[in-house]
Image 1 (cartoon, helix red, strand yellow):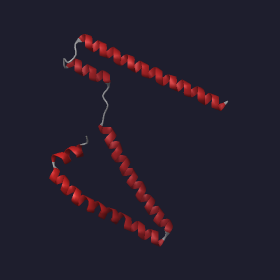
Image 2: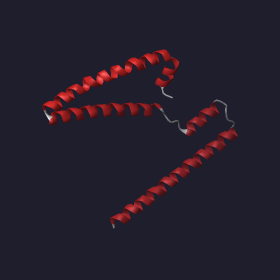
Image 3: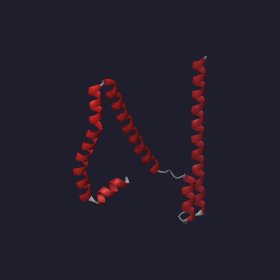
Image 4: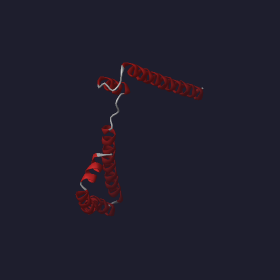
Length: 131
């Protein structure tokens, strides 16, 4: 759940007001952006195309920034670090800590072997295609 969705659930009245007034404001802002594009398109098709392309590029850049901000907020924690933290907090005894640590090491070794096998197979495919 994102911070916005939690905020909307905590403030339903403000959320309703934001939706009711936010929609028309967004449409008005879009019209302010599109009117110059249509004026340029009417004057010259090439200028209109470039203006429309510029609008698409800038909006795509903004969307990309929003997506990258969301992906950065979900940081992954190293399993070994998380296991060490549980051990320090006293949630795990020595035997359980060692068992889980060994399992993590085995899993990472299997992943490394699988990725190297896939890489070797792909290298052979590329080599066969070149010959």
